[in-house]
Amino acid sequence: MNAVPSDAPLGIGRERVYVWELPVRLVHWLLFFSILILAATGYYIGNPFFSGTLVMARIREVHLYTSIVFSLCVLVRVYWGFAGNRYARWSEFIPVTRERLRSLWKSTLFYTFLSREPVEYPGHNGLAGLTYAVIYGVYFVMIATGLALYQVYAPVGSPLHVFRFLIPFFGGLQIARLIHHIGMWVILIFMVAHLYFVILYSTIERTGIFDSILSGFKFMPRKPPVKP
Amino acid sequence: MAQTRLMRELERQGISRREFLTFCASMAAVLGMPKSASATIARAIETEERPILVWLEFQDCAGNTESFLRAGHPTVADLILDTISLNYHETLMAAAGTQAEDALESTVAKHKGKYIALVEGSIPADADSGYCMVGGRSALDIAREVCGNAAATVAVGTCATFGGLPAARPNPTRALSVADAVPGVKNLIHLSACPANAENITALIVYYLTVKRWPPLDQYRRPLFAYGTLIHDACERRAHFDSGQFVEEWGDEAHRHGYCLYRMGCKGPATSQNCPIVQWNSHTNWPIGCGHPCLGCAEPNFWDVMTPFYERLPNVAGVSASRWLDPVGLTASGAVAAAAVIHGIGEVRRYRRGHHRPPEDKGHADENKHESDSNEESRK
Image (cartoon, rainbow over all chains, first blue to last red; front, side, top):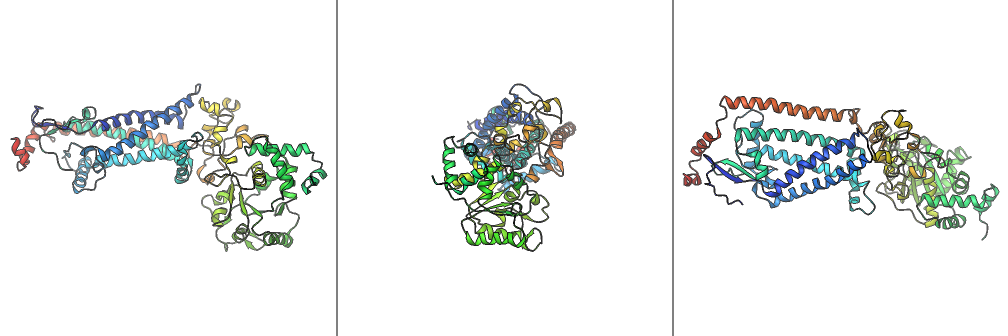
């Protein structure tokens, strides 16, 4: 799929670059929908504001099954960070190379209005990549606190009982519950900011970033991509 | 069968054989054993030599002793644990002063490595602090000597198990649990809860007499027969929880109908104990049964992590997160959205004023910039 002819007629000075592979796009949308479901059901579980026959039981059930989808997505995406293309690799998120650190610095200047030059790069700019790394850290905290909270309900013989060490690790179930609740808001705030920056970049860069998470392609100014 | 001392005592106190067997059956039930086990338990209690018990009290309210005295079958339990084998118990023993201390000293010396130490209350870490001295000796000193020479130590109640109230922040006496005060203590068993349920104390000793070893424990060294089930999972109000029917206010219609106390801060979903099944005061009732949320007293540091008792989430900066977390989260999300709109308007204006060149132009400009690049050259 990478072998898109770079001289295809795509408007003046633009070329089509395959950035997001199928697993990346799939994980993105499954995460999006599972987070919406998890946040809605989780909010109800923390603050049940209406009643009905078995409504809490059903909502908890939906929350638990959705959490399986969410956790598997996170694991698949981490695996893809080692197996995917250059834009999906772990080094795009955790800046260790000089180029990525420079990209982090440049994009931070852009986002804080100190520079008017956006970073032109088909993958994540340095700041975006680091933000996603932090958000994945939050995802892991959510999975760990969720496992700690679920572990006490897990049926006899469930392999999830191995996670009981997480309860003393977090300092008790109530602390795990608090962290889990705070994590929900951190992720929702991230989603709002993420949506805005996508629209912003889509408008000023015109690389088709918004559509790229459906198609996988971005339309970059015709020049060799900056080495990450 | 030759009449044992226990049987003679039971007869003397006018306790029928039937009453004794009822006690054995109830112990089998608490331990999660089949009914047929009650005969084995009866035989073990009748024939086995009682273990010698020493009951130490440190920083506590004697609540566990009070609970112990209200055992489900008090006379039988008393006979088994108190009359026959409890060699030292400050609150219950008739002896006082030097006599009492002698009883402890002689028990430790005579039955070294054979007696069972039951500890109630937490132990101040600093032996010279002057907190909690008994007979001129520090609690730490006594605990290290008595528990260190015991065959097994049972920490009775949350203070002895996890530090409890004395160890709650800011912990002025630097109170420790038995496990922390006596490192490496042998066969330590925890019976947390505030107070520990008398049925569980008796059942633990009966288990030891019958099976000759200590029961399987959970990760906090609590016997699984008593702490293997989440209160929430065995709660009589669980059906109301599952249907989202909650008490919203003390004494409201839902409260009078026995709805779930989840929204009133019940810690049943975070606490493991057999309260819903064994209940308290001879199976009379239990906290949730009489309309009060569970305080989570059987869990570590419950004074710090289960408070406020009437809120869902713990305190952060002195205010329950239940009160501020959702409003703050919603406001922050809204603020980020508003900032995005304002920033977006600014960006659009900047773009219209021409600060951002149209990408097509930029593309050409970039081409000039990268003239030196060989790929770029070839494309031209």
